[in-house]
Amino acid sequence: MSKGKIYLIPTTLGDSPINDVLPPKTIDILSQLQHFAVENIRTTRRYIKKVIPEKDINQITFHLLNKHTSISEIRHILQSVEQGIDLGIISEAGNPCIADPGSLLTREAHRNNLQIIPLTGPSSILLALISSGMNGQNFAFNGYLPISPQERIKKLRQLEKKSQSEQQPQIFMETPYRNKQMIESIIKTCHPETLLCIATNLTLSNEFIKTAPISYWKKHIPEIHKQPCIFIIGA
Amino acid sequence: MSKGKIYLIPTTLGDSPINDVLPPKTIDILSQLQHFAVENIRTTRRYIKKVIPEKDINQITFHLLNKHTSISEIRHILQSVEQGIDLGIISEAGNPCIADPGSLLTREAHRNNLQIIPLTGPSSILLALISSGMNGQNFAFNGYLPISPQERIKKLRQLEKKSQSEQQPQIFMETPYRNKQMIESIIKTCHPETLLCIATNLTLSNEFIKTAPISYWKKHIPEIHKQPCIFIIGA
Image 1 (tube, rainbow over the protein chains, first blue to last red):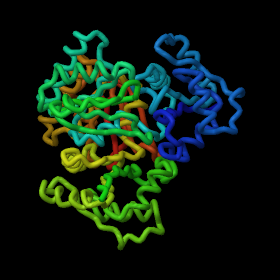
Image 2: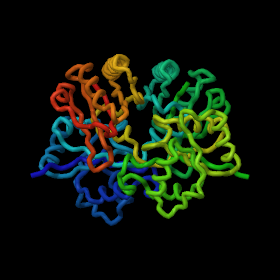
Image 3: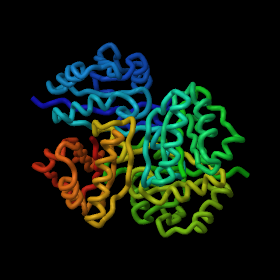
Image 4: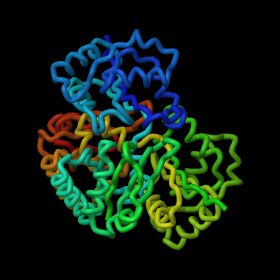
């Protein structure tokens, strides 16, 4: 009996048309799968309905895969793959296994010698970086920064220093309703000549991507409250 | 008169079918553009012929954008965008502006307040990372490592240390015909328990992605000579 495969299924970044960001193969594989490990079952149901309206959602088996999922639950999910069932991993936005718990499962899958197949779709981190005009030879992604203002400022200082000393743009995210505080912290903390890229609503009709020195942003704070956003600090 | 836009056009990673990795919108924009800044004119012509066989290549204006392109040549290319002409940037494989000279142009474009629109397509770096099972909250890309064996080993030691102390997987590439030497250097340099992901021929029919400790790779050196490959060192 042959083992199942694990497909990494990207989602749209917000409500962009699927033809803008998903290749036919990604949609095709998604339409064939009946078993998924997902970060959020409700939003994944909605996503599958959007991409493949004719698919019968009630025939699908969903496993919850979030930060509370234990290693024994993950092993249970992988047992079905060992037994020949193909599994899709889907996270909240963009590619799974980045800034989400998907990699707990793929790490365990490698230990069990299971095949992992990544599918192409939009990545806000990558789209922001390539558009930023910053060094694409050497960059780092830092996920979410600390929530406490003091800790966040300390982290921003570290990132700014690193971006200079290593010529390494520093990418990070924030929960959308805290974007305003994040921009204020950055403006307050970083040197006027340091470059900041703000990339908002990527792949959507109101996409906004701009790289400028902190001195510019001080006078032109963008209105990005509650909008998904990627920040990049560069030297 | 409205200004032109700059589109970042991804290419396939090798000879994969276009429907596997390109969304319809990416193909649609590519078919509309008549001006391109490209890393290699010959391979870009071939790529456009593959994606849109009916497009008249002789009507297209190509600007060469490589490491020898001067800032004044870049400004010349951007002048046409200022005058209302849309421009596509295309590099050798995957997304432009990563591990290639595209970001010289986008950086200058930001200075001139020109709009940059990234399109979705395959990224070997991103696909390797999400499949690796390594930490997707915090990672770094390091481009190509030094060619000299001593310098390369020194850099590998640094990367291994960083992957441990910062829990930050370290991604890097090698020119395909030097893959064998690279694997030998990694195996010789890194600790037996350090994790290494080798991701080869991504999105192609002979795709291979495996994460295992160095001790495993010592006994199972894969045959990846001349095959495009991403390496990730993790703790």
